[in-house]
Length: 116
Image (cartoon, rainbow, N blue to C red):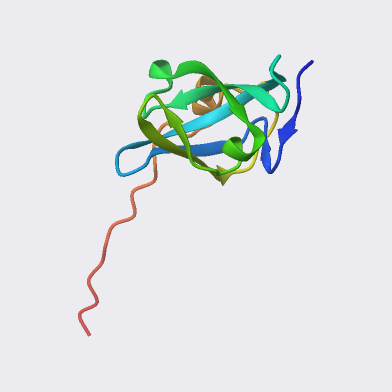
């Protein structure tokens, strides 16, 4: 049984996952399912890279407070998850599908110096 929302984090949200005192990644929440341990959830997510072809899918088992910003540990590394962007569109969109909809080229606007 999938769950659409745990606390303020919904399926489709963009989150920042930070290793405290270190690096961070951005990820899109794909799915929540209850774990067999009460009050714990399986959180499936896709790590977002600059190139959609490099996106990686992962799954962690976390409690609702951890999904919603409470610090936790992975091994000996302290981690925090922060909501960056609520869901956009449907949860069926993948990073590759979103990238296909983006314009291929930007418009170049020349800079003109004011000579007055």
